[in-house]
Image 1 (cartoon, rainbow, N blue to C red):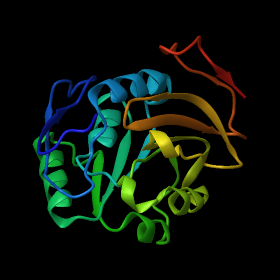
Image 2 (image 1 turned 90 degrees about the vertical axis):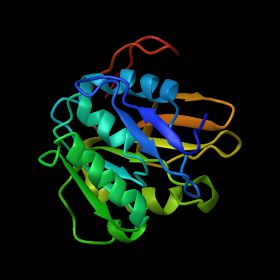
Image 3 (image 1 turned 135 degrees about the vertical axis):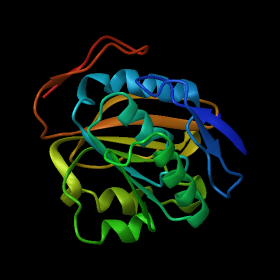
Image 4 (image 1 turned 45 degrees about the vertical axis):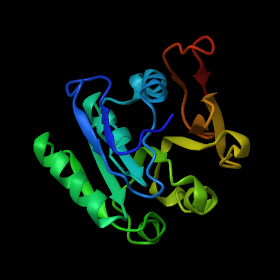
Length: 204
C-alpha cells in the first residue's frame, strides 16, 4: 500500500494530479491513492470551509488533498526537518501560503502547546512502529470543534479505536492498514455521501 521514495499525487479538486515528493525516510508511508480516494469521497460534504489539522504530515498528502477539495485552511505538523522543508516547498509551489501552514514540531509536543484554534477534521496517521495513536488522540479534545471528524490509519492486525466520545462512521482495510473515519459522538446531525461499503449514513 505504501510507496518508498518517489511520488504520490493529489487525487481530486483544483490541484488534481499534482505530484508530491515521497522521501526515503524511516516510517514515512503516505496513504495509498485508493485509500485517499475512498476517504475523501466519505468526507467531501464536510470539507468546504473546514479547518484541518494534519498531524504526522509526512508528504502532506492528506492535508493538501483536503485543501484541494475545498477546506479553508490546513495546519501540517511534521517533526523531520527535511520533510518539513519539503512540505514548505510544496506549499510555495502550490501558492497556498494563505491556506497551509507548516509547523516543524513533534506532534505530541505540539498538542501540549498553546492552541491554534479548533479544527473540524484531524488526520492521525503516524509511523506504525511508535504506537503514538493513544497519546495523540487523548490530547485532541481541546483542539476539536464540537462536530469534529477524526481519521485514523493503523496496522490491519492492530486496529486502533479512539475510545469514548467517538462514533465510527466508515472504515476499510488493505493488506497493510486499517483506515477509519470517526465523528465526535456529541456532534450535530450530518449526512455524508454514499461510500463503497454501504448506504449514506446520517449521524446525530
